[in-house]
Image 1: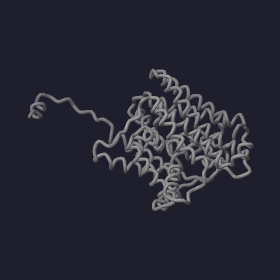
Image 2: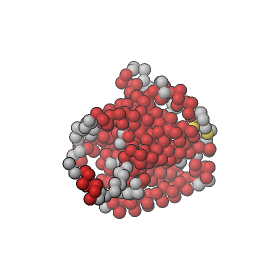
Image 3: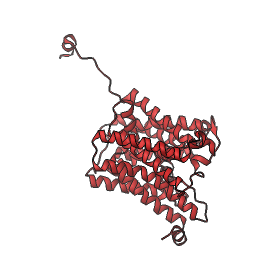
Image 4: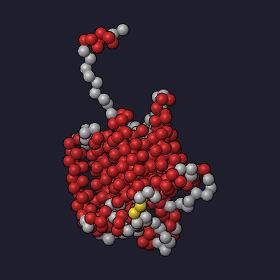
Length: 364
């Protein structure tokens, strides 16, 4: 059935929600099976220990870039009206928000999408962190943290249009974006071959990135065939998390749309992936000492995501795939903030070997 027929029969909200659920289901399955995680990739990069996590993230990112640019070049979609490119943006918000989000995802040991995946397979730490992330995101959007977010956002802004499009600013165009995506894809394949992957790593990494491209294509197709105003958007988890929080707590939530189906779809897909892989397991905190770390990290991620205009997937991969200036600045901020936080808090420190005198002093 064609898009016009679907829209006429079921209406835009239902079609968008169903598409969001289907794409979210596939994204959750692929992300769970491949262990897609920006935090783990950043740690491998900064510790100079490139391995499977970095290769998975790079494979997903490059697949998203290649997929989006192929769709643009084929005329299958037009993303020039997307919020990441067309609306006024904040450079200061992207940089500061990215730094805060990067620090937060190290503290919580997972970004927003990873928390959803872990929660679906029974990780109660991720459930708690995800709820606090959603509360902080909503507070930053329209609550007590909103004035601070707006203040930082106004420090340095950029007008929408060509000024936010890196492919237009540099003159590379979609063909240049496709070439860059191809280079990154080749690097990802090289890293993957060195890591000795199984089938699910390949399928999951590529599938995760292609679902980002699918999100752009689907909403663009609905927008092009609808008489109503339908925003062209991709996958993100900060806004939908805040939306679902308000939907649970209040009757005045936003009408159903793509984001409405996305989060439940990701949870269902992640649960399915964990069930297939035999990794369903209830996990909680081993002690109360680590709880402040997770709480602080979730708050930093929620505020940082709303300040930057997206999470590790929403800004880092979805916005990065269309070469939005602020999304790339956010991605740089995330990698920097996560690397510094890991260095200060988690990176193993070398300890000099104990000599005979030290051993004698240490003996009971």
